[in-house]
Structure formats: C-alpha cells, structure tokens
Length: 113
Length: 109
Image (tube, rainbow over all chains, first blue to last red; front, side, top):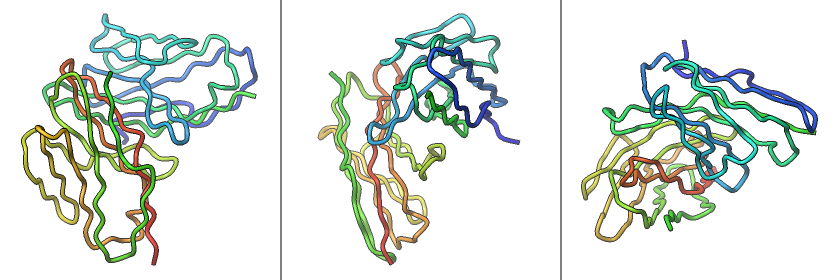
C-alpha cells in the first residue's frame, strides 16, 4: 500500500465550484505539505503544517484553504475554483528527524473549465 | 530573496554521462536534495548532501560545495528510463525546502 495517498486522482470541475482534495499518510510524519505544479514552473508551496495545530501559508495560498483533521490527514480546498487553478497538485510529508526528506503522493490532476 | 538555478533542459545520449548543475542562494543551509520526476508522476528522492564532497549511489552521484553555493548531479551509463526532470531543492534555515524549477533531461538512442 502507498504511504501517501491522494483523492481524487483526476477531477474536472467548473468555474465557481468548491473542490476538496484529500491527502492521507501512513508514514507517521508530523509535517505535511500541499504543492501545485505547472509546466515549466516547478513545485510551488501552497500551505504546510508542522503538526495538527500548526498551519502556515506558502508562497501561493490565495484562493486556497486547508484543514489538518488529524496527524495523518491534510485537505486542500478551493472555495471557488477558477481556470488558472488548473494544475497538478501534490501532497507531501516529512519528518524533521529524517532531515526533512519529503515523500510525495501520486498527485491530483485538476482541470477547471 | 531565495533562488535556485538549474538549466531548463539538457540532451544526452544513451550510455553517456551527463552532469546537471544547480546553484543556490538561500537564507541558511541545512542540506540539498535531488529528486527525479517522470512526466505526470510524483517526485522521488535521489540524494541528500549536507557536507561538501561527492556522494555516490550506483549510477548516480551528487556533489556539494557549500562555499560556492553549488551542487551537481552526475548520471553515468545513461539509460532511456533516465529521461525525466531532475529537481534540486535546498533546506533553508527554517527547514523549509526551496525548489528549483527542474531540469528536463532528454535521452537519445
């Protein structure tokens, strides 16, 4: 079984709809991250959480919100999706004790029409 | 500001050797990672350097010079399956990973 899972894997939605992307991990890591990836731009950090009560904005948090429901679960929401949020979204986890090597989920391909 | 530079794209021949460079300017340094990412897939860990010098792992080696803010990833005996993007990332003073945009490596037969 995969250590970091994301649901859904693919989603097509319309402008203005609310979307939630979910991430679960069985690695026991305290740190979790949400990234988006656009062609040619590399990985950009949206939000990160160092534990259940700690949520921090990344470089591109506008238009997104997150919820850390438990150590193992970290959800990303788009309250009102817009076409320029079309991207590949990755969840990742890490542990400071493991020099913060990040382990990635398989990604969610989101298309906003 | 924090910045990581790596070439956008490189081309190499199957069986050859290729070196992918990465230069960085970050607020503090707690290590440098190289990840491999095949198109449409998740990045996967290749190497971690925190001290100067060369780390060898099979066909892949990674080098770090902290004083120069420089690293490279060396791939030997290239195979077609090595066609992928290679991402350089630096762990800054807050233990945040700062990512480069990645180098797309194209392997030709």
